[in-house]
Image 1 (cartoon, rainbow, N blue to C red):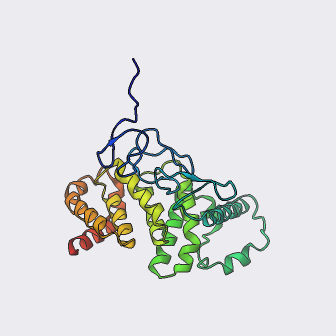
Image 2: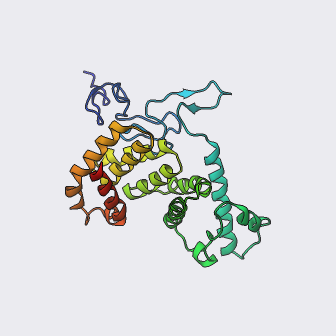
Image 3: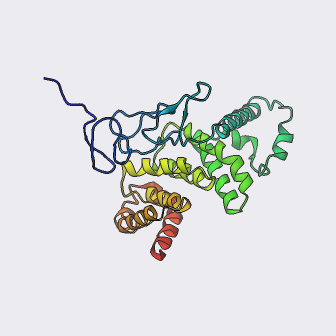
Length: 267
């Protein structure tokens, strides 16, 4: 007797009956689904890829020169630039650690890059940074530039910062929220939405996931979604804040949570 497909059942996102790897009602992924763009395994219930932001259920478009492109995907150029920038950063770290090798033109490039002034810490600090610390340093840099209204500098550093997070071995809710906020302030709403969806797929009432989803919905003018996320945030706040000892990210982002709750009550 043949067994039923493991993908038959209810959609983890909307609860509709689903047969296959994607829900026909909301497009969310079910068991065994992979991203059509980067082939990453999709979390059941996710509507976007957590790695590249491509919508779940998208199909490759091979019409352009045989290259694989996904409808609605982001331009690959910023990510290529980010990879080059990260390689240059790694070369600088190696030079400082193993003999302070001079990189021709490096000082000139640093001086002329938008917002670069003051980024470089001392050589000792750079050489001791872990991948997580490098990602945190870039996150803080982007958010500070955003608060200062330096849009050009935000656009310069955001791809580098997002790439730093994508290289981390463990993207927990705290890291995904940070990466989503960088994507949000730099206009990469698909990427930000993907991080919010992934957080909420794991913990449906996670405050940081609801806050990030609300911000993106507001930026994109999706008022009905904004109202829904706002209501969920207010309803879940008391019980979720009681989880602070278990959810370190709530303590780390206490200011963001307080501001979001104040804004939610005013809506």
